[in-house]
Amino acid sequence: MAMVEEPLYPIAILIDELKNDDIQLRLNSIRRLPTIARALGEERTRKELIPFLSENNDDDDEVLLAMADELGGFIPYVGGVEHAHVLLPPLETLCTVEETVVREKAVESLCSIGAQMKERDVVDWFIPLVKRLGAGEWFTARVSACGLFHIAYPSAPELLRAELRSVYNQLCHDDMPMVRRSAASNLGKFAATVEPLYLKSDIMTFFRDLTQDDQDSVRLLAVEGCATLGKLLEPADCVAQVLPVIVGFSQDKSWRVRYMVANQLYELCEAVGPEPTRTELVPAYGRLLRDNEAEVRIAAAGKVTKFCSIVSPQVASQYILPCVKELSTDSSQHVRAALASVIMGMAPVLGKEATIDQLLPIFLALLKDEFPDVRLNIISKLDQVNQVIGIDLLSQSLLPAIVELAEDRHWRVRLAIIEYIPLLASQLGVDFFDDKLGALCMQWLGDQVYSIREAAANNLKRLAEEFGPEWALQHIVPQVLEMITNPHYLYRMTVLVAISLLAPVVGSEATCQTMLPVVINAAKDRVPNIKFNVAKMLQSMIPIVDSTVVEQTIRPCLVELHEDPDVDVRFFAGQALQACDQVMCA
Image (cartoon, rainbow, N blue to C red; front, side, top):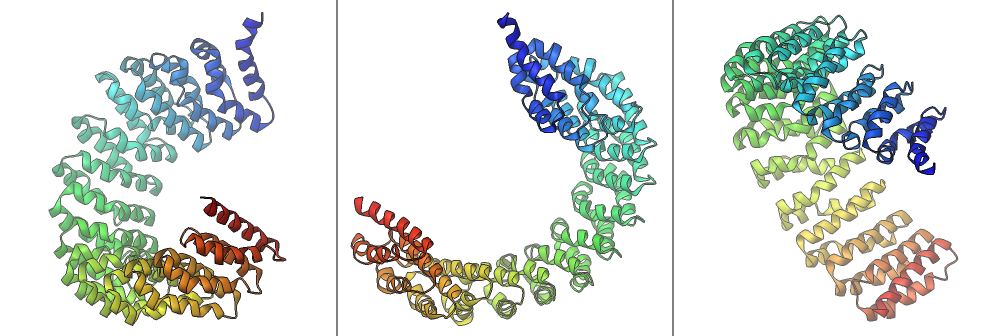
């Protein structure tokens, strides 16, 4: 009797938990479906578990989402692809629920299963499912159906293919905008599976109808399909059928549609070829860069480098640069920030002469912009300009602005400058750096913002690695050590951080002679935070210095700190002493 009851036990628990009022129990039960299926075996999973799940009418979206997710990978548990069709009924039910994320996950799982099914099974089981959903009474079923055609179509015989195209046509003209939106967003995937003959006739008819839809939410999704369809068609067909649509969309009455065009336009340039791009798409792009709506200008400005890289430098200089100059003084700070994030990439595209004559003034204007994000976006991409115009011209034209930004009132701008300094230093060379930027690097160690002080300490380490330990000992270390007498403990702590970062770079001898005495002396500081940081630093120095130094200098200091009244100081001193002992044992 026990042998009979044992396999029944997991399904009994599942049924109980799936009917439990506690949502977490129901969720856990769904997540354990693969385990339960293995316990039941393939045949009982097909005959008992899957029908049970099909009849399960849970009303919680989280449980349904988990079920849709689990069923997508369930083929191995039902006996392989030969029996994959048994998974379709529960997923078909989930395709009709009201919650969008559940439907989308169910469609995703159906696509995954359908792609693995044998051609005969797709015809017998999957295509009827698509047709049922496509003719569903409730709009949710019809929305889900649109995402399944690209899986069903390749396996269908000629008659069924014609029927599927007819069903998709009906969905493109559905009364519900949600269905038409789904048809528009999935049209590209469906088009990729359709034969060239029907692509030019049927699919392009669907596309034209969707682009003329009354709802802007449908039209803007049709825009997304423009680039996909353009790549599927021959260039001549693309110019004749897709190009007029996209040019028309660039002047659509809805700014959301124009926004989508601004995001997609550069992709279409490759599909139509250089001449139509120059005559049709460049003027359209110019209109978008000068659009009345700031959101459209933001999207267009963000794609300016990609667009310029597709067209010739002459076309970019003649038609696009004038618009870029206007955008650099745009009334919207977000437009200027979008432009600043990509404009540096135009330098390699336009070449040295155009960059110097036309782009440099724009860079300088954006570097002095009142909005910090604009300045930040320019700073973070300066290296792209340096590769084109060379360091001499960069230092003459942009360095004064960089030095000014080093004292910017917004700390994130100062931080971006600090992170750029090592790259600038490697390109300027040591002499120029000492002359122009050396004092700035020390100044940041005394900044009021912790993130700046921390970045400044890391910056000194990277500079020491770039210019070598001798340079660091001469120009950095003495100035850092002087700051240990600062009356504010936070700045003294920054000095300790800088010393710990510089010690591995300058080497054992210099560390012992110049930096270690300062650290040992800081152990007598009145502030506990300084003392436990001394303990941590001494621990980090143990691998760098000689074992005799550890025994004669570091250990006595740590022993003293280990008897400190403050519990944190004793803790870190104890950790450091353990590290000392390990070194001595080794």
